[in-house]
Length: 294
Image 1 (tube, one colour):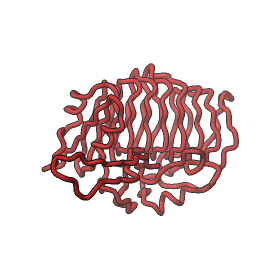
Image 2 (cartoon, rainbow, N blue to C red):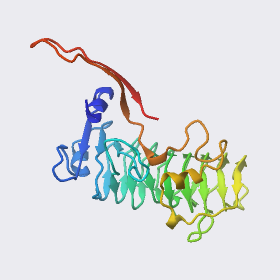
Image 3 (cartoon, one colour):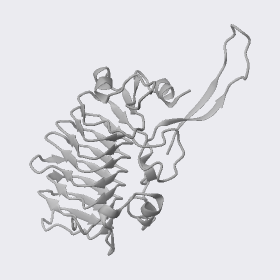
Image 4 (cartoon, rainbow, N blue to C red):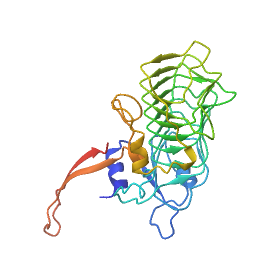
């Protein structure tokens, strides 16, 4: 049974739509736009690994958009995908959308959509537009800011990410915990822009300054003095492990630590029992044990 069929079997009242822009693929869709045009709320759109970008994506229906992960070949991860699913940018206009396991070269924009989940992806800037509250940003590798210059949003959960040069823009009342914040020579220290009432806990800091508004709270964060040049960072296992600076603080700590290569939490077959032969016309009894990869 393929992963696509497995997801369809374990997802109640939902359909899995597979997309591949690889020449010769048997996937029913070659573009994400075509899959979205045929998707209903709650469906899953799975992107095959490809050396060609899937381009810009606009999501207007609540779906799960799932890629295979990132940096797979560089990290020696053995799985069928063998590569990443890259997009240029994603615009999300549907509340409850889940985005995971992709690589984005441009920004992820959330516009008038709340309760969006962005996880286990390699990203740049996350723009949170008007009415985009209560978003979950979890286990991502990011080079860029979180928030927007002129739209105020609040109540986001930002946890277990590795963040380079991250500034918070126009966000408030957010829980920001178990992240590894990295400074770099190109962008300088992370900072705040029109943000307040942020709760920082159990983070690892490299060159991160407290703000001067006296509205944010800081509880048990761990400071380091080293700097990492974001542009030279390759993301291979040896690089990522260097960021594992603490077992109690930062992206690799807590109940749901950062996952190398961003493999999405997709269903997997843990055990399969099936007869080797059956009589013609008889029913084949197959037992499948399904789990979720951590």
